[in-house]
Length: 256
Length: 370
Image (cartoon, rainbow over all chains, first blue to last red; front, side, top):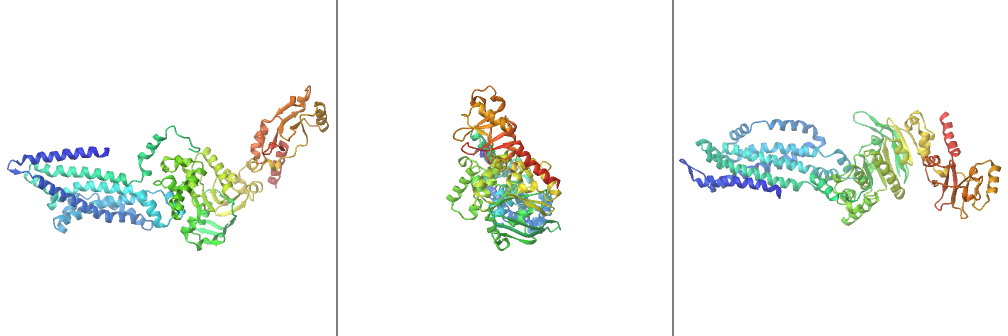
């Protein structure tokens, strides 16, 4: 729980900023977007992120898994190199390309964000499964686990924390990228930011930027909790030190 | 139990890892595959549970060709332990040990009971360790769990690939001793891979020495040491093979019944007379009920009034199953250079002398000259 305190305080401060801006009503001749508009835009923003992320998980995890199989490993290595290159394409360029091909709006933004979210997920899934020790796999196979059992009982549980970490990274990055996508497509918090930039009013930009930051912080905290929950107990870094603590002065065992 | 018939393995890159290997391991036999790295010993082991497919020949377990069986069923019936242990880090010790029982759909209670039993068997208090994770264990403890896991569903046959390889020598020694005791009780059929000649001699009922994919000699350790088949075997077992051989012989193999014994009731004069008559400098003293008491030396009898005054109590004594290398070090600490061999009731059943051991060693020297 303590892990959630700092993110919640930060999010509360950001909400306070929005409340303050909203209370201003107008800045010069410009009307500051009210709570209603901000919440609708935030919700739209979240929808954008979740839709893209959902698609990316549905497609990215299986791809990462399949290319980690021995028969397809020859694809895996070049594919990982490709994802590294993919990550270097400027966000703005890709999103702009998508809006030209698919027209501006929600769909184009989702497709662009999906491509962005896909790469870290594929890469982490692949890396997570590759990281399972060959000795562990050999032991599993040697004791009579079928191929599917080795995957479902050994490889996937051990890869899971790394996969979830990939999802977390891609989701948080995507909250920021979605703001750019919104600027191009005229949706979500990006739209509020675009308006602010267009009229060059700091307070209006803040009405889009503060909720986006709060969203990123909260999503990161929630996914951090999920990541911890999805990590098998034996793999958690604090298990060892915890029980060593408990064990102090306990029984000495032969061979220890 | 296991029969390898003209088994060979050629890897896709053309390496002939195992060539025409024929070998039989009897039920309850502890067979050690020994040889330098790359000799094909691990490949041979992994062909038994089909982790590596054989190129030619066949392997029979209890008369059934392993190729005819479902591969997963086959493996669940064979215990498997490897050098890197390969414990599942996300599962508890108990869950690790119950791997095969889970695959065999044992009830949960039975799985836990079995894990408990096996942990105690390998010397780890089950209450303390059942629910620990592998990352919380020391290297030696992990090895123990690895051994327990391969015994999980009580398979009659165990394959062990350097299971004590990755630990410090002191822990390894201890684990070897304990595993031998376990094996004495369980009488499993074991195929065990090592490159360590000392481990092979200590653990194996038989040793299959391999080189370049060929089986060079399959024999019990004593035969391997005393009658190495060729230069390679001799070099591999080492120049100190005579000393190694001592470890294989037990006190009962070379002890002799003492020619001269006395009870403490005999007079000093009688005893001196008996010793002088035989030209001996000492004899052993035995109580009325046959218990061994110690030595009486000729030099101590001069001026003594009774035999008990002259008695030198024995510091150490051997049992019939004491290995000769241990008996030898006892001898070095003994007043008379002899060691008494006592049975479980402290009855004197024999004596070990340097002479007897020298005879054993010189027999070896002769075979060396051949």
